Amino acid sequence: MWVPRSYIYGCHKNKGQRVGWKCAKASDKLGLFYNGITATKDRSFVFAADMYGNLIRMFKITADGLLEARGEIASPHMIDNLDYDESSGSILASATPFPFLSAKIIMGDDTVVNPGGLTVFSPDPASSSSSSVTPPKLEATFDLLQDGQALSMISTGIIWGDSVVLGSPFKPGVAVCTTDTSEPSL
Image: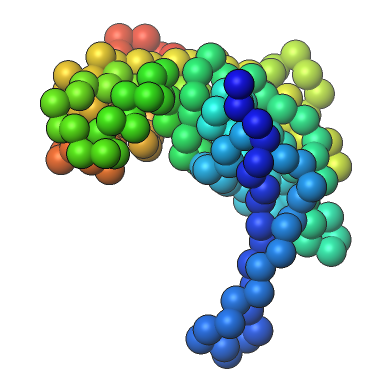
């Protein structure tokens, strides 16, 4: 069983300073392991991937720069890096269904093949739209997982037309996955 032990910190420095960043806890909401983070364009909401919790936590940015917890979005598996798509209101997340295989790759075992892909969390069309006070209601609407043969240990992905382009920090190149449906379009 995992014990929550991860916080989100906010850091700033005075204008003109090259060193001396000041960091402090931005939220008291503990996570299992925060990693990927993104924000809406207007900076009213921050989304953080709680990797081992298999969820995205939503936070409202307060006037004093702190983060106020506003909900969670369930994920079908572990997710990592996040990207907020302003035009659609969707969040793209790298998908890692077998995190312990990732640990083997990180430790240098280049024989391990780790499936992965991209999960898209889109606004629920039945819910009312979000505002600067209310976060969007998002749900997993697209989940592309490839077997790891083309590219192992996925950490990022984008949608490009009818294709999904995946990247890995530990393997060279990218994987381009095509689909014959319109599902990946944002």
